[in-house]
Length: 76
Image (cartoon, rainbow, N blue to C red; front, top):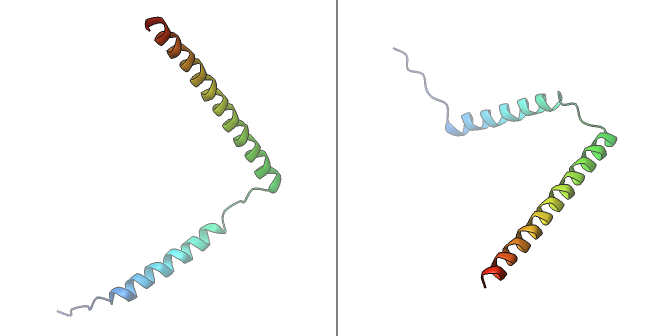
């Protein structure tokens, strides 16, 4: 029975790292990158959504605070 010798841990690890970066490079070549106008449009949409949700939370917090103050004033 011939016994096969296992490769050194460093050799195996270096091979895996090289293969990872080779596959990464191959996948990045397949990516369709957005154009600058698309990036600006998407950034504007995200900023508008952040402002809208922030305003909604601010209004809800204000209404909740007024309600809690009214309840505390009612029972105080």
